[in-house]
Image (cartoon, rainbow, N blue to C red; front, side, top):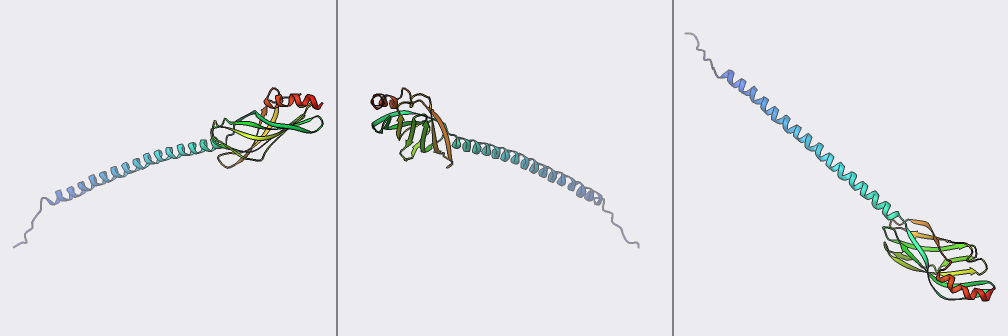
Length: 191
């Protein structure tokens, strides 16, 4: 008797099904991989955009903190006198307005022009944005020439919010100011 042979007719279908089943799995895997790559790309773009925005905001804040804009003018006088002929000295105040976007600390204020010398008292003054501070100053006026040239260039040593010291100049009008009015009569007598 001859050995019987059994032919499995489904064998070919199992192999086809197995190989056909691998192809959809690979397709699904590729789709998942592509979706992950696209998601990583999109996340990278979003994070990059946020990073650039944060960097720009940080730079703008540093620039804002470093900016110094101020306005100054003679504000008041308190007493005065002379110990040298033709020279009148008065204690006064200089009003300083912080016109910048960040707080500043005025460390020093000096001004010198023909016949005029202004020196601060050495006290620092913190000024908030749009705030005004009064700086105590000593004003020395040579009566014969003090009011001949205008304006007086005042120099300020200012510490900004970023803790940097900056030098700033501002022209201050002395003629017609309270300092000028306080010196008019005494200067007439000192000439």
